[in-house]
Length: 342
Image 1 (cartoon, rainbow, N blue to C red):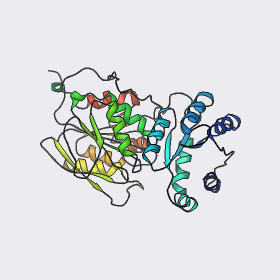
Image 2: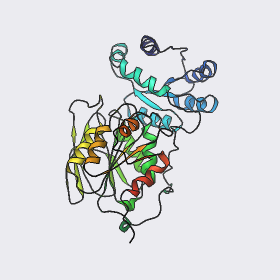
Image 3: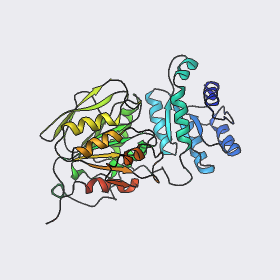
Image 4: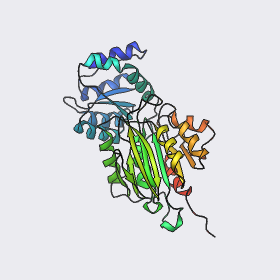
């Protein structure tokens, strides 16, 4: 695996300065070579990936891309690695290593280059994950009567997004009664675990989307990996979704644009679209559609984005109402549905 990845990166113009056989060696080599980016396996002898990431972030903060297999155990460990400072993860394929990795070489190269640009020297692009018993602090105390009825919130994110999504939903007051749809670029096998993590950190009832799911206020769906999440219909404050394996949009599936555009087509109550950190332009067309339908739109600012790709493309449409740092986004979302005091 090390040889195959090194060959792919070298052929793509990335200079691989060192290879490590285990986590302990990786920590030492990072300190010696000070690379721009590290690819880190989850399972290694002597020192595992989580411990290695922790030590690297303490001793020589460096952007880390985790390499994870498609297993439940690896999914849990991968999210733990993100908690301690890794930027994102790439899922290793099953089957014959060299053949399958070569097929995904463009995707791997793009992710490595994207992660290499992330500033991990301070707090930029890194937001602490809320603890399960944490009470919202950035949004004011309120009751349901303070808000417009039956609002829907759609959040789109990619590279660096999992921690940001957790941060936003952990701060979102249940009294606002949103129907929440989250589209995080993430492969199948990981989105179910992602939903459980957020559910433990949010007052909202969060679960992975299944075909035909219906949600009302106070509930959230995480788009299932490898499926587009379409809003099928909306009646009496309840929306129904459909999963689709149609071709990728913007080279990804699930795509934020698909969810936002279908929501804008059928939802006639308050609609809010939010674009968080991520590479590429997914979500820009969806933001335009939400704005055209009379909805409100927010993008994360450059300073707190791990990768200022998706938010920047959204802002460039001219259809974003507010550009906010991650810590202000929950309050910004709530503000869009607040009733005026008379």
